[in-house]
Length: 142
Image (tube, rainbow, N blue to C red; front, side, top):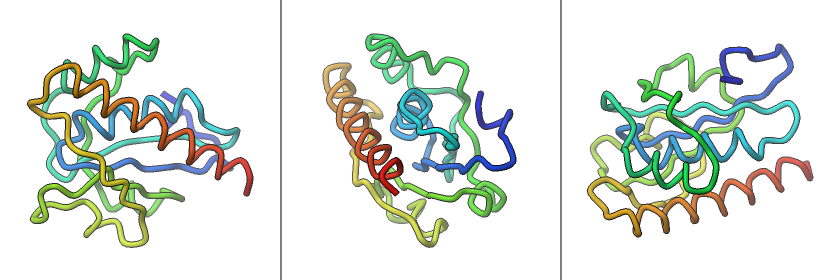
């Protein structure tokens, strides 16, 4: 993973959701694919679960991105502090909303694919890809 082999001058984008099992994992995978030079991605959750949503893994594999090596991670003060850009995937559960902990962050408002059928997970995946591409374009133009 790029995150662990991080170069001194690399900037990090942090994608956060509650369980770190679907949206943020897909965003991390897309950003790794499209990332501009000098940027790395990581994802985390306020209440991570043991494994990534299998339908998220399947939906990503369908378009050639393997996220099976990614693991759910707990959002930590260090991750927040060392990230140049922080993105909350959406706050469906206000009591554990990641944006509360992130401070200066963007909220993409993307619905959670948890318990959704594969077709809905694909729609969410495609929305995340569009948002990541838009983010990369903005980073490259700055």
